[in-house]
Length: 246
Image (cartoon, rainbow, N blue to C red):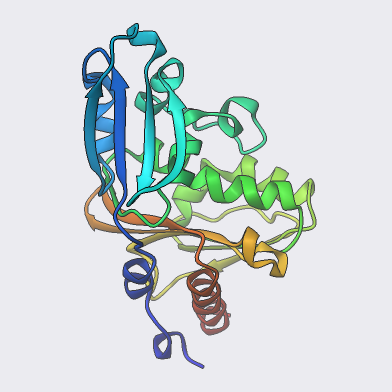
């Protein structure tokens, strides 16, 4: 099957969008300092006043009436400035921002901050690292963008049994990395997309993907999804592109 015969990353991004979610913050006053972080996601944000200290506040994520999870005000600083360290770093793995990304899976986001997008992608990379096997496919748009993440992917490959495939337009010649298969996207088939997809080593509950499209220079619209059918189609699409790029 040619890559263009299946659903495109844009179509898969739209298919990954789930039911609307609501974030409710609780505290004496609205937490304006995290509003910018929450507003990046396509969710309803409301505030309910409680006669408690500001530091004792929290936020709750719901889908309709279904409670999904909560984050304490003590961790709100990580929502403003999320850690973007390696997947195995405790500060990244245990961050409130990563927890928020997981809670808001299926909610579209808009980001013009590359560091924040890297922090968002860490949710997928961390699952792959913890599982330690299966396939991880990543489109970096251009291989020069991969350069800054090379140490991370070197360790991902060396420290696991993952099969890793990287795509990018060949504007930089990366060194050979054991366990990382690099595909030069000469035709620019993936030049607009930043995709990180983990196939869960065949387990549906572990499958996840970030699908983001650069709609304007430096500005991305995307979604994180745990829908196994979407992740399967994303990985199939990338396999087809890999086959066509040799």
